[in-house]
Length: 441
Image (tube, rainbow, N blue to C red; front, side, top):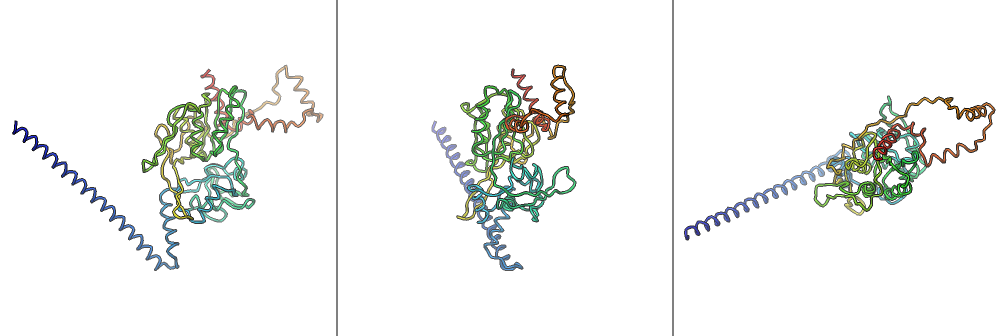
């Protein structure tokens, strides 16, 4: 028994010794790795300082240390990704004006795609929209300045300016044999983000142009107003450049009663966050079709992708832009800051949006429905009335007063068959929503 006890104690002593030895080895290895990392950091910083000193002393043009540091920071952040950048005192001030004040602009959202400054979407009703800019247009020049190697913030600062002042953009557009020149006069950007119209007696069309702080509330209000007659909803997110994340989450929450909506994951656990749906906020369960295209980005991709993953809606149109990263502004002094990408968005299925976008369930390219109308096609019951109308055309008489005014007023609240024929994507969406309504019964 004594021998067994000594053997057991012996084994225990060996195990403890090995454990201590292994822990010491791990500690030594970890400590060595940390020392190696710190040495590498110091060597890199020393190299950076040496280059700064050499450039400051020998560069053909005299340049001071402040300028060199600004250029170094600018270059470093530009090379991280298309959305990170260094904000100088001037840039930071402009950003605050954009966030808090009123400014003159064009009304477009731009992004970098394949190294080129690209129009994500013109905002409906703005100077850019009225001038004819389209999603996917590549901006080659802003006035006489080339956009090659230009950052998004630099481009925005050039395009923003005093209300009423002109600007010329040279753009490259798919299908055009040569660059186009677009003349735009800057205006105050005032946006109505939500439009609601009727299609027939039982389909509600909701257009969301951007995600401002009132989007979810306004959409819910429009749905509740027509809830008794609505059997299907078409949500139009085409050319929607995005906006506030919380509004995208709240919008999905109107249609989905449980499960994840979107999550964000970064380098650190503190950057990770998951947004989920709540049953109490769901306002309708009627069939849905969502319209998307290459101008749908960021928040609109979260909405369309989440509804697709939950099988809550049929997506129709074209592949979206593919902007699924999270940026924050981090002040480094009282007057300067950096904009840094800290996380990426992930849809409920786990797929990413960044540089991939959302693919529609049914791909439909934009265009018109070609129709041929027989103006003289009438039924016998309509013959007398029709002939009276033809006689009025000959005699130049008409009892219809202010018919154009009545039609224009109606167009604000309804989408007519003629309007559908001019938008083949919307026409297809209506056909699909009617089929879904029939299936649901």
